[in-house]
Structure formats: structure tokens, C-alpha cells
Length: 158
Image (cartoon, rainbow, N blue to C red; front, side, top):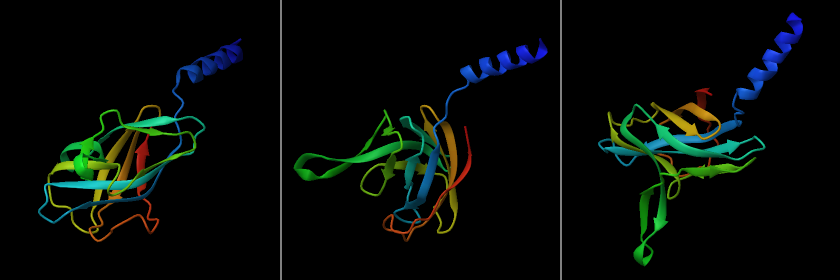
């Protein structure tokens, strides 16, 4: 009787727990335009190794007064402009989001202190299904692209 109740309880609990996607953060780095800049950005590759799609819906960081998901779009006369993407970014099943300079990125506005080479910035990425993923992102003021696969470390996640 006890064994049957225990099994039934475990099955019931498993059915109410959310299914979290497997999120991997690769090649993460953050930078600002200058030591006195009031804003900066973080770039990374976000890989979904789960068989179901997810969506990056938000970002947060104690390093800035405001943290948003941004991208660049071609405006009038082909001039690129940066825009806040409130709906976030689709993360395909077994796919990837490329967060790169000149494209999708995490925007850090109102930096509380200057970004210094070699420091780290803690960023929480919020996914629709996977929940919060907290990462430590190294500051690299010299980097220009995603050439060398440096990995951001996942601090914790849901």
C-alpha cells in the first residue's frame, strides 16, 4: 500500500514539474565602447540541446540600471539602428541564437561602474521554458568578434 502511494505521488509530482530545455552558453564576452561609457553589451552563442523550442524573453544584471534584449535593424537609407526586442528571441529546438556585435545582444544601460578588462559581469538570462540561467560573462574590451571559442560559465539555472 505504501509503495503504491509513493509511486503514485512521484508520478503526480513529475507531471506538474516543468520540462526545462538544456541551455548552453558559449563564447560569452561583454564590452563597452570606452572606460567611461554609460552602457555596454554582452555577446554569446546560446545553444538549445533539447528537442523542443524555447524563447529568450529577458535579461537582467546588477551591473546596470537597465538590461534589455536588443538587435540592429536597417533603417532609412540603410542606416542601422538599435532596437529593444520586447518579445525576445526564438531559440529553435536543437538550435542556436547568435548574439553578436551588429546583431542580437544583451544591452547593459546605466552601468554602475566602468567595465574593466578581465572583470566579469553576472547576467541572468530568462527563458520561457528553461527559466533563469545565470552566467558569469568575462569583460573583453579588445575583442572584435566571436573568433575564439571562449566559454561563459553557467553559475546556476532552473
